[in-house]
Image (cartoon, rainbow, N blue to C red; front, side, top):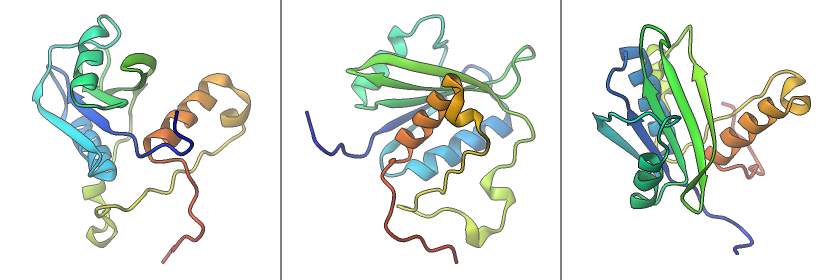
Length: 156
């Protein structure tokens, strides 16, 4: 076991049908995680909650401990599944339905994230401290974007 873990690698996939909005979000998440991220541009006929073995295989093959799976259907529009693996077995998965989506490209181009910048992740509300589901999602996002806190932060 390591005393200090290195950066976790992420794997981003698209389902058989995806919308432009969910594609933009997954692309932005991939950009924030670079260079420790891989994005599969091909569409995958996988459903992580029905058969996790294919996702586990892809994570092991690409040495990724975090994954994201984007899909879009009439029943579940703009759907994003985020998950973690431990020893290349699914540890936890969360299905998020996204609404009111704004991609990074819709904001000021100078503010667009560049390589090796880390996002400022803010968790608003008491639910992230008291509710176990929200606390686990918070833990996932902190794991995804390297949870050690910097000594100084430039807010300019």
